[in-house]
Length: 130
Image (cartoon, rainbow, N blue to C red; front, side):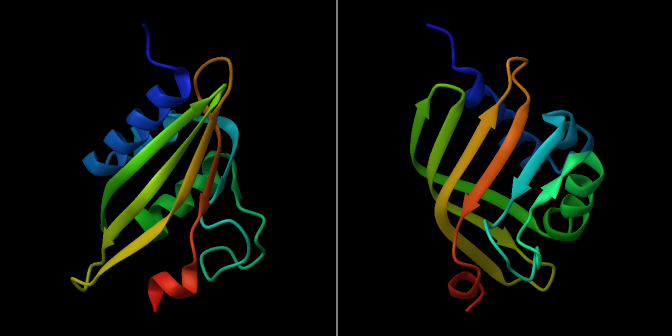
C-alpha cells in the first residue's frame, strides 16, 4: 500500500526542517499555501491571518525556524483524505540554548500535486513560552 500524499508531505516537511534546508522547505508548499503557526493572533502573527505564499512563509522560516534547532516528537498521526493531523510536541532549541516545546495538534493539507496548501498548528503560545 502506498503512503498517503499528506503523510509524504509531512515527512518532507520534517526532513527539510531538521536538515535546515530552506529551499526544500519552501518547495514542499504550493505557491499560495497558508501557514498558521500558531492558529490565531500571537507575537509570531499579530493579525492572526497566517503567512500566505512563499515570500511570507520564507520570512516565517527566517524569523522562527532558521535561528533555532527544531525536532518533532509526534505521538500519534491521523490521516484523513488530503490531511494529516499530528498530535505531539514540536521542540525548538533557541540560539540562547533554551528549549521550548509546543504541545499541540499540527494539521497539514495537500493539493492534488501533493504540495502543502495549509499548515495549521494548534498550540498555546503563552503556555509554551511561559
